[in-house]
Image: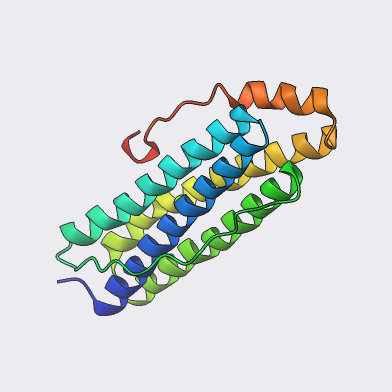
Length: 169
Ligand code: MG
């Protein structure tokens, strides 16, 4: 049977990952409205990735004999000033998620839960990638500073992203 403190923090993380999914889906909707289908595609794939993250914790908690308890997902923003603001918020959000993942590692260590510590290490690495990809796009959108031509070039590149479940790689 899984430790209650670990069960609680994993349930909180399932909610946080689903909130992330909801945030990126909202960004995708806004980007569609801005006629930036490539950016919208990129965010829609983020939504799928975050859902997969939530499911990795979900499946793990079940596997350990814990109880998954889904809680309400808080509302997400629906409007942004421009794409720079969208990616600033994405990066800021991923840094918050990294802190949450590190807190799970700290608690697993404290509670001597080696299995949870080990499973969570996958997320520690995943967050390095999440921050790096958000930062890379942020740098690009800052570089073109809202100029139509540059923005459309980035949009075309982001249109090429396809979904592969990161948790199955
Ligand atoms: Mg995530």
